Length: 283
Image (cartoon, rainbow, N blue to C red):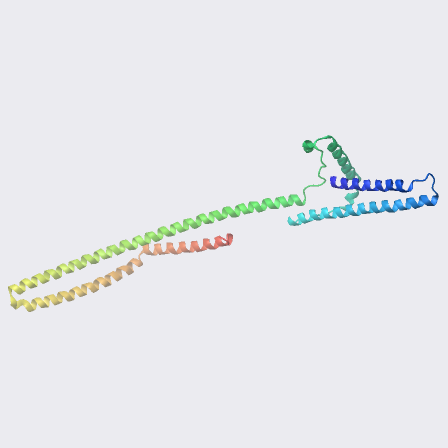
């Protein structure tokens, strides 16, 4: 409004200068004929008409540029604006605008710049509608975003819990296998030690018998050979027993349960990773 008022005042001064120029250049005689008066008025009419037409065109173009800025800003928020041309000729609203301009410029002439905040302002003619819907949509999107963030935090917590349980299960399985292996090793070592003691005892008996009676040497050698065969047979039986024991351990309920737990945890982790990729593909 101030910009339009300044342009209007400038244009009025231009029109006043046209009249002053006519007075100074043509009104030098005391009497004029009708034709001379008509000529002066026609020339003045052309000048004034040109100034007024230029002001009206400039005002229209200025309003177009202002509306273009507003519409460009509205497009960024996907707003659909509608104008009612009939409201431009609403006398009541026009009088309100005129009264506001009058009061505003009177206040500007009397009040200092520090008191500009107390100036009367024209109340909005119409609020709500599209802006209210836009605010509601923004609020809804913010609430949905908060829900998605909470859901993502829950999924992350579930994923961490599943990873912890998987780690614990793997550690328990390794400990169980280690204990089972140590037990088998201890049993095997004990059997080998027992067989070694038997062989050593046989060897000592053989040596004593050999020194005591050379006649029984053949029998002692046969006993030694048979003992070695027995040792080999026992070692084979131990190997078979070890394989059978390992097979039985794999068929135990504890081993199967542990294996099922690991399988389920792996599936849960795969599912959670897929769901995480669905909500946060960039991460």
